[in-house]
Every structure is written in structure tokens, then in C-alpha cells.
Image: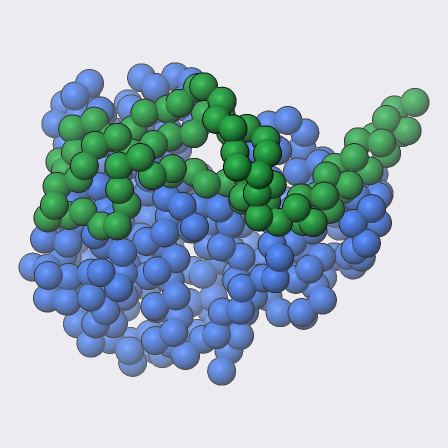
Length: 81
Length: 292
């Protein structure tokens, strides 16, 4: 086995550079065996969700997605009423 | 030259980076062009599905709508993405109420969708479009003697068995045999890997990991091959914990594209084999010298 204790799930919200927060992500905690180590390093986020990236790097896509979700929600309420 | 739209999804840019590296290498070797879907967004599987299913279909639908403009099949290697994109497509075509709600979403985004995008998995494309003969023609280092347990996971053929059998898929088996590996009979090939339980009921998740790997070992497999980045990560990263709780087990878990790539003569680094947590490259070096 290359590592002793690999994963830690973080419950504390982390503020993202472009706004918003990320919770429940996992980090690699310990170095790997140099024999098998790739370029994934200690502390790398392992779940860099596109949604989070959107807020920071692609605000126009983020706005479009939000508009879609708002429209879906509005239509659901309209149907329910 | 065959051409497909490529939808990486979040995993292939994160934990499943080795999947992307090996997939792109293999498709390039087969002279198949993958054009990344422009401005793709999260498929909605992980972040949105547990909150609201219909809005997750709208998120997936945005990708389908963008793909439809290009009029090419959409290749989705991640099992979760593949399932959600197919599910969104299915509901859009089969459930008029859901489709109407999705259309409100599309309109708000300035998009149109007519339901024609075809979502494909690399396994399907490799075997049914490219063909085993073409794959054999690219073979440089057959994986002779390597015994592989083929593990498909739960999402690829259920509930939509679009290209293989629902409970006993065989497409990966065919591919691995075509590159010289010995495929062991592995009845657990579509059982849950426990990934969904790791955050809530870890003892259940770890138990499932242990059962899958122990059975693969019992059937003399050297290695477990998978198609799902979520399964790969779960079975690889939590193997140590599963061993501590349920008994020692050690088995490398690799992507089928990494095995194909080795057989095509790519190096371990080119295929992301150095990213595996349970080391695979030393074992594979015995069967394919390129892995050294």
C-alpha cells in the first residue's frame, strides 16, 4: 500500500476565490510512495467541481445556469399552483 | 477519420485524470478525433441530483443542447455523467411534463433542444464503431498472462442498457481479450462499489470494497479493471481502510483504457499509471514492459 492515511473529508466551508463556498470536499493528506507518486500532491483537491470553477472563471456560464435553474423552479411552482 | 464530441465531466479533470490521459492516448492511436464539447457544464449528477431531479435534467440538457448543434455523438466516459445525460435525454423524450419544464430552462438560457443528441460510452464506441479488428491492429505489447477482473459498476447498464447486457455486460471483456489479457469470470461485475456509502455509512462502503476485491483475488485476478472514475477512486483510495477493518487485501484498480494503452505501447506516465494509489505499474511491468 502506498499511503498510510490518504483521505480527509473537510466539513468546514471554504470560500472560493470567485465567490461561493465549497463543502464536503476531500484532500490528499500524505505523500505517496515516491515509487508510485505522480503529480498529485499533498493538499490537492480531489473534487474540483466544474460548478465551483464556474463561479471563479466563467461567470457568464454560471449566470446562464442560474437562469435555467430559476426558470425550471418558476415553472414547477406555476404547475403546482 | 471518425469524430466524436467529448464530454470530460468533473471527474476526468480531477480524481479521474488518469482516465482522461489514457482515453485520449488510446483514441489518438486509433485515429479517432475527440472534440471537447464547447462550454460544457457539470452534468448535475453529484451536485444537483440529490436536491432536485428535474433541475439536474435541465443542467444535463444544456450539454445535450450544445452538442445537438454540432450534430456529432457525445462521448461521456464517466459512468455518472453517462447515466445522467442519458436519463435527461430519456425524460425529455418520454415525459412531456418534464420536457416542458426543461424547455423553460433552455429558453431562459437562449437554447433549443430537439432531443436528437446521442450519448455514447467509450466502450460502446471502441467495440461497436471502431471494432476489435482495428484495435488488434494497433497491438504492440499484448498483455499475455495478465489476469483481469472486469468491473463495470452499477451505473453504466442500469437502468438504460444502451449497448450491453443489464446484469452481465461483456463489452469490456471483449476489449481486454482483444489485447491479450485473460479475463476471469467475475459475477460481481455490476455490484455496487460502495462509493455512495463512504460519506454516510463507511462500514458498509468498506465492506463492499472488501467483498469486490476479495472475490477478484479468489478468482486469481492480478488486477481489477474498471470504466468508472468514481468506482476507481473508491476502490483504490479506500482499499487500505477496508483492509484494516475486514482483512488484508491489495489489488491495483486501473482503467480499461490504461490497459489498452499499455498494449498499444504507451508508457506508464503517458497513461497516468503513476497516479494510482495502490501501485499498478510494477505489476503491469511484468506483463507489458512499457509500464516500467
